[in-house]
Image (cartoon, rainbow, N blue to C red; front, side, top):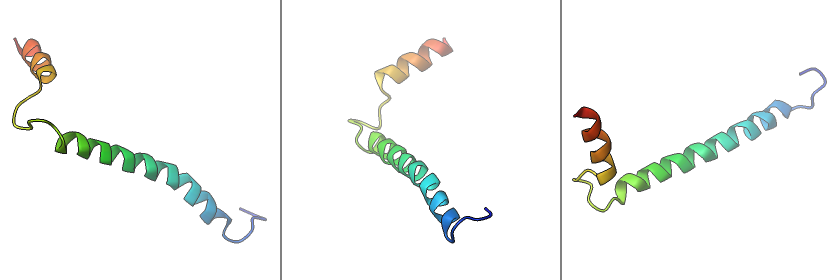
Length: 57
């Protein structure tokens, strides 16, 4: 940008990337926790069974 101080665009890029990085990190940690801390991962949940069985029959 004409007339901008040196390093100005680096600050703008950092401030644009930081919220996206925080949301991405939060979403990935939450999804990992959902899969890792299920009570019994070898069985389907009741909600999943009703959604898939009712749709297929």
